[in-house]
Image 1 (tube, helix red, strand yellow):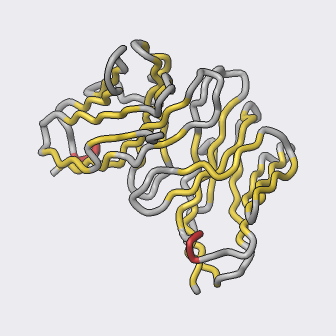
Image 2 (cartoon, chains in turn orange, red; image 1 turned 60 degrees about the vertical axis):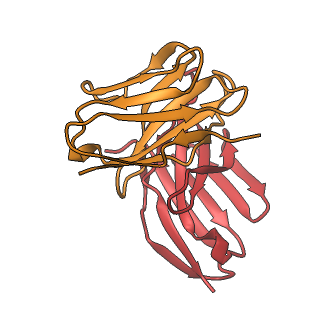
Length: 114
Length: 113
């Protein structure tokens, strides 16, 4: 039973480019959370999605960031016109149900903006 | 004031020592308490989960919650070099119907042989 799969593991983008981060939840999980971890900081909640729905995006920056979780395929976190401050580790977690507290994390995507 | 405060350390102990890791929180609505372990360049891994005051034990690990003081702890007995990692406390409010977590900054632990 594969865990939460994130790709790419490492992503380098120049300032102004777009970054696309993908997350495939565990089998049977239809709830996905995205977190960001800046250097020497804890994980910060960004967005919570169910299939085809954004439930809570209170942690997402207002501009340049968007997320989706289509009916088919992985969840995507998209960052447009990246800036140096976007450099961080982005983690995805999945859970089987809305009421589940236990979430399983992927290995993360480390984004570096140069 | 941060909702969850955790001393980042670093904490260095000899093998076999008892390790105490702590977090404080400010929001009394928090009702679910977790400890995650994160190895370098890896994703967080759930160690312990509890929702009530008191102690919960799992092998060498004991999680302790004191809701009256808004204080949570993780104790590691007979620490091993393989326990060297960053330990994150994570808390969830009750009443919400999904698993949005608020994390502490993480404590870096090194257990040396």
